[in-house]
Length: 496
Image (cartoon, rainbow, N blue to C red; front, side, top):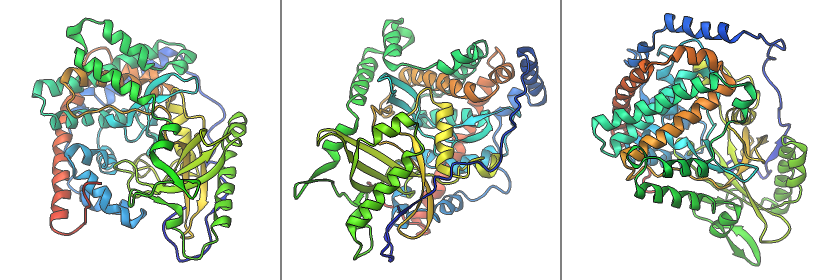
């Protein structure tokens, strides 16, 4: 799928390209816990924890607007201005869209030499609630567009700085900002220590049930956690998350047209597929080709989920703008129908490009970027969407692109930062730190990383210092984008 084309042909499904550039060694090396801990301590001697406190932009640091424009080259041209407009809302929304800038900067920072599967864009808005296959409401990382193996420190720094930037946006005092950031890092460090002492299967089965956690917070001493207002707000957010499913999307995003259910047009944010294809296209044949694409994608699911998806038939497709940093990549929503018109399923079909980390941490082992996203997500998440899969598609414009597919909404919920009190943000930071540690513990050497971090808060303090320095850099980069728009160098479309 892609944008308007002068060619009358429709999209075609290509082989899913399930494969890797290289094969990992089949023989695993099994070190003892003591040997693994020694690796971490040796890394600490080589790269002291306080070395992470410093951020100084490189003398040859790329122009931030140049980097953003480099991403625009592969995106939908008419949506680029929307991306810049969303990034201009505040330094925090700019930070959300600036994963490439930070990856470039992190490449020059100290690293312990210990790697894990990274989220690649672990800012605080990329954590949230979603429904597990067992219908529990879990808290986890929820965005893996940039996932790739790399230095575990990069995810921690990306997360910590996001709290510093958000706290600045909310006008917190210097003491409150530092407390929030240190809590994030301390939670990560202490959780890694807990995971380092656990059996492998116990680490794998670990998850964070939001309802259980909220009950713990309600019963804890009031001075140490959430106010009554914050608890009430959290309860309301969770209740709202449980309503965010395919049925809710069906009621909000569709209407009847000549007796048939269609996705509502709301350009440029939502554009039905028939408004994007070339004039004269045979729509019946086109829709049949879309069905074939879904059949090809179905092959990337497990057999039980393939069977379930076969119970649904394609009804309609539209392009839908999502997020901040993702704006301009090709994202589609597909409405499918099950047993009747009150049994809908909404899938999101989202373009997967090269991870921003690959230029700095190494190319992905996966030939298909959609498979890279799916593999990283399954490795890092406690539970993943039952319809999570991937596909390679030859689009309307004749270009071949990779996509990953998942449910559009499945009890998805995100934190509301605006108006959040410092104690509530501290609690949220604790959850994010724990969750990132669990994700890294599944793929990295948790014993070695924990040994590197140690029991004292040296790393916490270092990352708090780094966060202040990098938040300053983020504000300079934000100002550079503002200046580029003011000068006419780039165009931004705000309010969308």
